[in-house]
Length: 239
Image 1: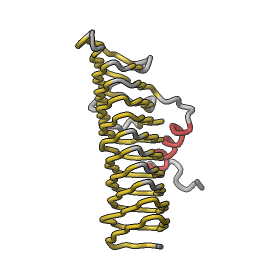
Image 2: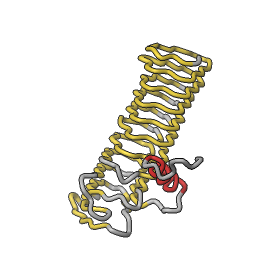
Image 3: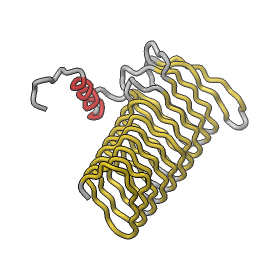
């Protein structure tokens, strides 16, 4: 399929699907399928035992089981995920709940609102424009690397979980809620002059790592270049 600028529905089982541009898809059902889409503006996806690659999307609603998603550039994602793997290049916001699923995100710009159980969340670069990170997790490993200039308020309730915070510009307190259950509250600020950005984590078991990304990292450099392009620094120069 080349371009479809109207609304449509798609249902495929035991096959493959390719499309260039899709405007609005009210229902995409894939079972044991491989799908490749260059651009999808607005879509609702149901996937089982499938692999989907989407170049660019604005808004996705996903209900999936045992599938793989390769999303290069995404706007909003809302996912109900079971035993999936997400590989995301850049995303504005991601929300939903998951069970035995893994999220690998290169660049996050605005928001996470997730309820994961038995899985992992790894973000290589969280931009300073972040508004909210809200995660309520069970038996989930969480690794979040923030832009060096980022600043945020942090509030972590953790039960029998291992927590690591940045070793600079961090002002936090730790309060014991229940010593027998190893339940604690860690709260305060990270970075210089935090405003309204918030990191709220409620974790039962698992490992939690919050850190600053290294300025030399490829994701940090890529994000910096995109912002310079956006303000016209490279205007007139070949990119």
